[in-house]
Image 1 (spheres, rainbow, N blue to C red):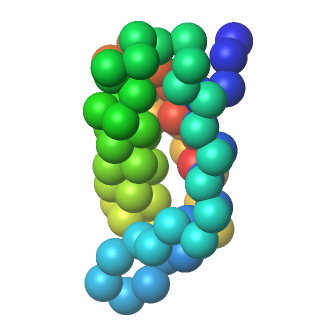
Image 2 (cartoon, one colour):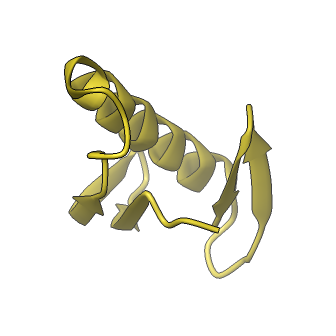
Length: 68
């Protein structure tokens, strides 16, 4: 299993704010790097916003597995 993204978000009252994030996108096509990174950022923020603070969850998004 390959790790493509690691992010540390802060869940505030309104939105999840990314404090720090790292992405490993070279395995994708060069022209898709920005779209892949945008997808990972959006998905991580969406999952964090929909989960409760302090909880753990695994969510399958398309063919990828996201852990919160």
